[in-house]
Image 1 (cartoon, rainbow over the protein chains, first blue to last red):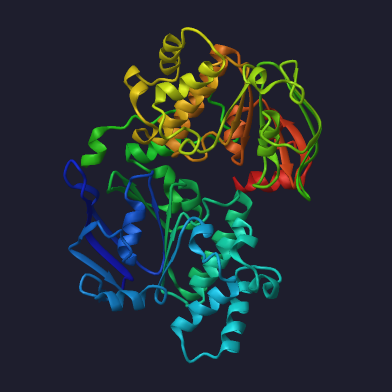
Image 2 (cartoon, rainbow over the protein chains, first blue to last red):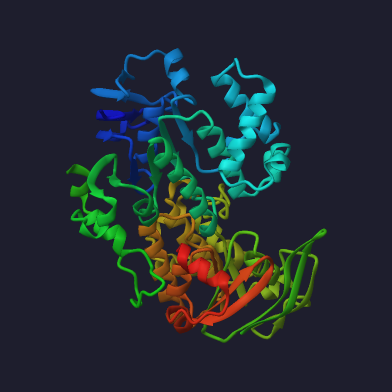
Length: 278
Length: 239
């Protein structure tokens, strides 16, 4: 059975010139796999993730024919039930750990908090032990020392690993990672992605990886969905990006510079208005 | 055109750049790659007088960066920053933002020159009266480039010029920069964490790590994987 089913998702924002539809009829189905959503800014990829998580901006209007998580009808779930799912069975990681961690709370305490929200029966000491284990699991050296640090004392890569620790410690069934490595150096990116990968492989977690980076997504996902202007224009097996047929996807691939590229000029994308309609 | 000799930059107790030397010929495009905190941006910032505590020597277009008035240095070298959202004055219309350096220098025919610059970067005249928030990221970066070119400098220092942009926009900006370099005979010093961008744009590059130069390669050496350091290999693998 699939973990997530979305049918005909539409997200609309009011504006001075009338409502603007930012997501226009997205349908997705996710199993316990790694699904990438790729698109440029404004394509609606982040909004799709946020809608699933139930954290859309307040003024956004959501219409959807069907949105289910592991058989639970999310369109009928009340705020309390959504809240219980969030952080428990569904986790989310955002781009910048600087804005996602509480700046005035030591990181260990933040992880412990997220453990104890999920399991109040756990003693303080047991929660601490679990937090340390998790820090170790995300490849943080000297977890004892890091436990007592404040977020500003962490590097970007460490901060992002702490964020991941906070999310995976609750062993969610679904993790939505929105540009989890965009703020990180390429060498650190690999480590962070492999940690997420571990969680998928070892526990059968479903992962939605939202990114503008087509190559990153293709390396770490099973399937890739390409969004343009609020719609899905193409879905591909990640191993077969070269087999893309949509001109937008092909254009995106072509305009990337390559270490070994020889072209003096990069091909640019000529946006066909029809892409937004199709 | 650019000579950096044994440059060391300190921020309090921390050393951000540690004894780095490099030389860029006139008309050449030179890249600096490395992870965040490796000191690559600090070299650029020091060259235009944005850091205080440094030793060593920087010479740009024959001017000693330490002993030249900022006003005079500005005519020879200009910087383009990573974030086009942060580097334009939000309450200046585009025309005024581009005119500002020329106004400071007391130049004439500013109005005509603004028109030429807009044309050069591929924005039509109507953009002159728009505010930065009305522009896309790519358009804003074009404006930042126009502003940098306003004083007709021979050298552009580009600090992650496309990292904040979508890849399709990145391609447009990189093409624009390459065209401008050819047209105006500019010398580029480009900082990026993206080795592919550097390989595409630069004749030579220096790999940096922990405030120090790891090695300097030509584009051909990079493409032939003729590097000496393990760190460079790691960077290439991760790209």
